[in-house]
Image 1: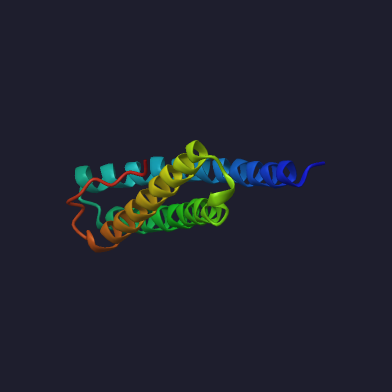
Image 2: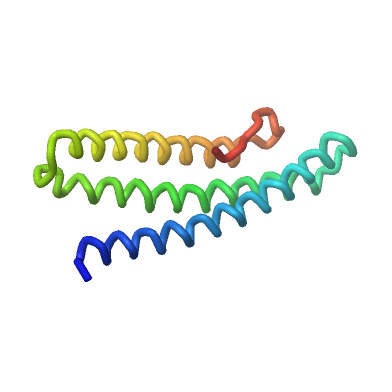
Length: 125
């Protein structure tokens, strides 16, 4: 089989694994919403702290995923001159999008860490 095809199939396998990670994050997010609701309704401080811990875990995992996609996009820049102008533009836009997603992950993780009063609604997108 062609080396390019084998590389692309390997990337798809990794992306499929990442979809399972997202499913886990969705479950954690659902549970964290339950804890947040418990805190606001019952003023349960333990739920508030557990909610914050889960948010930090969620955004830490997402940051790792975002770093993977950023690195993958950055790796495409190495061979940029081998492609047509149209594909170069797509690679550059992909890199730009990956950069912004990585920055958003860093910002959301920071907010989850510093927001001890639950003043800001955080959700992964």
